[in-house]
Image 1 (cartoon, one colour):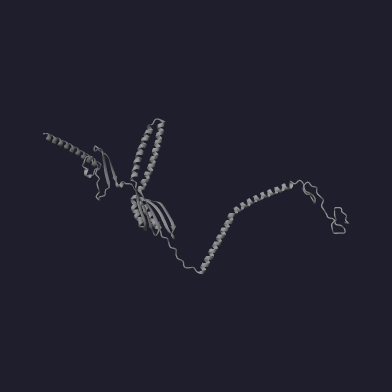
Image 2: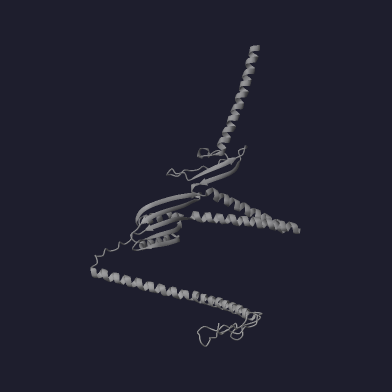
Length: 355
């Protein structure tokens, strides 16, 4: 009896455990299938629309349904490959026979596609060879056809293609713009209902800040939209130069003539350079002449003033034939006398002439 009771209790416990595991498994399965509902679950209640694959097997879209714990749908998100924001860019280098013909063909193709030429630069000459750097923008739908046409204009030297996926930034800007516009509308409603001046000033500041942020976001959004809508293609065209014709060797007379003409041209050029130099020096020479005249006149005035002060500063000057020095009487001039009988001058001291 006791054994039978024990076996009954064990059986009851085992059935309870099994029942709990079954309930947990069904709940987990429901949550797992609730996040993604495919075509196999289309007949279930509340199921999201199934994503149907096209006949060629390419997946075009993916539908997701988010449900709460009770199984009620909360939100659905549909991601489509066609909705991705891709910026397409290319750079091609071509060697063409005639740059003018290639430019005409590219301009016509871009105009027919609905695009425009953003930049065009031509350098070089026909003799040395011309080079063209060109940037065009064409609608994204005509990107491939225009690029194929360019490759037929000449020999392709280089081709580079790359893309930028800006889907995440594009959607983020779109959501932020919607949120900002809703916030701005609420602020304007509050501004209309505001009563005090302080509240009005604070709301005006907030409205101005939100408006500035919205303008910045819209500018970036429009730029990305333009980059996605129009693809950019940079084209580099090279044209080979025309070789210079080879001339026959010159004769002696031709070389003499060329040498004389070259010497004559060099002489004329030298004379012109000297004439230009002299004419250019005229202002400098005039300036030096004026400065020299002023300096010479100043020196002459200084010397004249010093001479005037030196002559007038002496207390006594020379007078007559023999002027004395300062403070001394002038002495009479000395004239030697000769004796009648001899050639020696007489002594002025009063000595006897017979001695």
